[in-house]
Image (cartoon, rainbow, N blue to C red; front, side):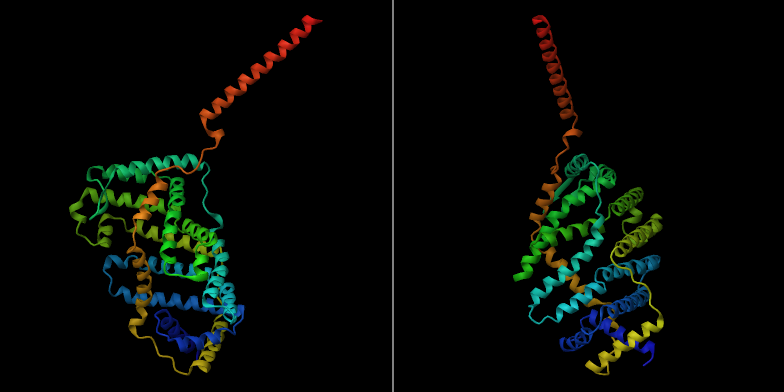
Length: 414
């Protein structure tokens, strides 16, 4: 079989796996083949797999482009690069070291599925922690927290709540609301992230653990997974990107307010074009793409392998699968290439969380944002510093007075 045919054969399997078109029996046979591959072979396979997925992204984008309006086509290159950055990030975390260790775990017949899942997570976490090793810091956290809480309280005053409509900014105070949001500094955004991520993760954890049991439920409630998820949230939601988005949103809002009747009924991409903000949106996508790639590079970088080596590995994998499963692999049908199954599964997860009672989450978030949780360092508090200086002065004067009094008494005695 030629290199291109081997490549298409494996590519068909990747697409069918992603869309859940491979049954359990066939999947078990393929897994049996993969159990015999070394860590070095896994590195080559993952490099090839990453390339295949990137090629598939380009093919899917070409199909989608046929359905896009002209305004949407302007973002084609940025969308492709962003999707590839997401793949790069995923492959960096689930690199050959992780995959090989997971494969070795699969060979341990004495482990239950839950125990295997827990062990897999303990393999993945160290790789994730490489991404989160440089979590953003704030020099004077308490001072920044005080200003952040003050701004949040002002924002809360400008918002109304109706059961049917949810949270809405009061019509006559929208400009003030936008002004406060736009005034948020990068350090204040860091503080906001640190304050809200704990209640959000606790909420998600609670929703997930309701559907889990045994060893995995215990592990999900451990400090390790909670801290890791918090740190990942921190680094992906980069404060510089958030600040850029706020500035862009403020600019778009300003344009909209100038001529609301022009933009009100336009589709989003058409409105962006009419506002003259296409390049700003492209820059936002590029910045987030670069951010994901930089995070991925902290963990693992995939170097291209020679075409001859790639062909050799594809041929080996194809032959091994055919010997175990059979000679024929059905090509993916057109609907398979839309990855509807994958998107549907992801949507169901968010729908399950969205349908749950959010009042507890809102109350917890409001609680942490409305109050300072840190304490200022005493030497940075002017009042405390002044009292300390006054105390030192009084003690110094009293000590001096006693010393000279004792000296004078001795002189009189002599």
